[in-house]
Length: 284
Ligand SMILES: [Fe+2]
Ligand SMILES: [Fe+2]
Image (cartoon, rainbow, N blue to C red; front, top):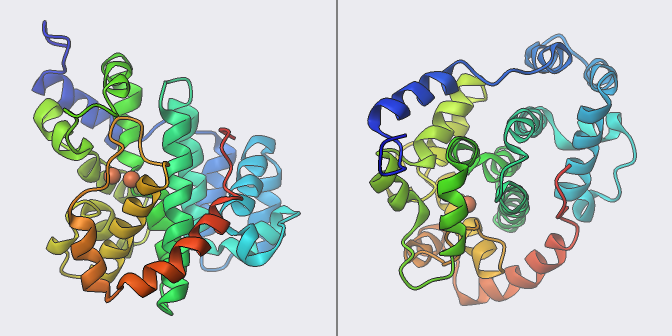
């Protein structure tokens, strides 16, 4: 930390190297990730490996219920959870467990986890409404879109405690712009780095990188704009990130790109409210 209490560029580059080294995680989680990666693996093999780790089992089960129970019914077992999540979201859930374990003691992390799940659910609602063929990807993008924030909350918790108190003040500016001012980098770029380091599918990179600036998306604009709209709806319903609670002006532009008008929002919002009722508030 510099004398101002804020990180210096040197601190940040050190921290970034730490991020590239990946957080420490157990051999059982490593086995699960490797098995998900292997094209030879069956759902049964993946489920039985997850079951060897009670904490991971609980996280997978709770996440599956939180994200999908209002769409698919109650999820009662790990094999069922693995099947209905699908491999891409399952990998996202396991990666989120690793980062939650590292950051869970810090303020703001439980609100961030709730926000992440809410955006995932809203991405799914919008994706279904638009008959998207990328539902699993949308669900995962929603869950991981703010994953870079875990790094900031973990490394600079004292700074964030003050920011959270300013979250509903008139002087607040969008979190990602403030991060650029303070740290020289934002959570979008960090999130992109996390998903690359964990070898998540390439289709997730650009929407996570550009979820606050989706008009720059070249490869997957529909996914980036959907995440941006889902993020805005989550904030409007009071489940934003703790340091910035407002809906950003780009929200309406993303609605236009997706072709969603007032009538569509009338259809979508009650559905979103219903689906959010199942989202877990407590940290797993
Ligand atoms: Fe964000
Ligand atoms: Fe967000």
